[in-house]
Length: 394
Image (cartoon, rainbow, N blue to C red; front, side):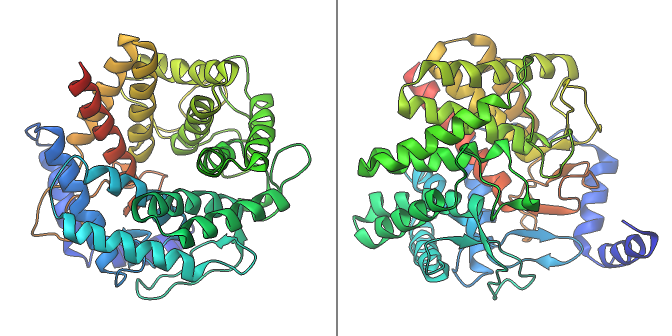
């Protein structure tokens, strides 16, 4: 960011009352009381419902930025927020009527913005009332499938499943022979974290039994595994053509492999996913809490924290604990969740912030600085719900 851009950013940020509240929190460095998981789930729901309302019910705003305010609705994350909120209302009776309305309107909105060829596009609007896209995107299409499957399973309406199948057929059509995707992808390079697209195909195969979806997922997973190094890191994992991926996409990669393996019942894929998850568990022991970016030798590239990635890893560790009963995975997840509980914003006077998790902590970090992206709340809810499930089973 150039000097002129930095000056413009600073001038916009200091005009917002939210800036001074966050600054006060940072200076005071107060230790918040830790509450039960349901209270934090409800808190995260508060922010997501505001992100939906600000878009007129049409999906969920991509993020709230101290610089630019609320962004437009985001098809990618709207897709995977839908199943999380359906799961949440099975556990809590908090604002259920509003959640159900938001889920229905968001699923319908997804269908309305789907390309005729089945794809979903990037979301590039800076206006919460306007949806704008430049082109089809493989990753966004995969994530939209999660929401469409969930809407179908909870409503029984075939139009959602038909939309998901149409999206999956497009993904197969544009997939490379080696299993990767290099067209309609972020920055025009293949990415290991597209294993989460494979997970969407696996889930759709489980629902429909359409074999092409399973075969396409396996092709991509095989390509991703070829990019896994001996120490559990992944090549081609970053948003950029570099070797310092953000924790968010590292976790995407592991989650895609791990949960696909559970559906496919493939032990070798499970073992590969656990290799990376165990590596990060040991790294958290070393670093105290996971940092924002790591190189391929698991050295931290910066000393800020990606809160979304921490939430994702907590859920992954809990899922592995559920399968293996490895207590160290449970302990790692509990450390991460406690950290996030201390970072979620809880002040109804600041409705744009209330219930949100910042992209970075401190908020000027490299990953979505000065902003609350909606997907952090999604993964926080997922992790808390799984921890509650494990407590009940114990």
